[in-house]
Image (cartoon, rainbow, N blue to C red):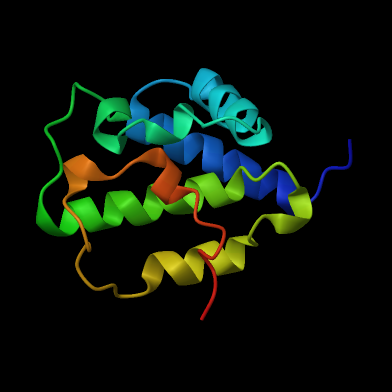
Length: 123
């Protein structure tokens, strides 16, 4: 295994999900990667973000919801199976500092599949 910035960005993704979930996301990562590689309907992608949210924390509200969604989306981009498809930490930092419009749908309706958007870093 070659150690480079793509390993660092992967670690950032794992740590970010660990903070959101309140536990190591290993099983979730495995579940999502196996469901995305199968040709059948992906059950892991139908999981709601609110259902993996650390239950010891109060539900996020308003602007915090938007920040959680952006952080989760970035985390999943950092966990892409192909290291060359992962963003750089510079792209991650830029995306985190960018102002965003409000969420197009309510937080409690967002699925993990919607966060796996491959166009996360376009435009």
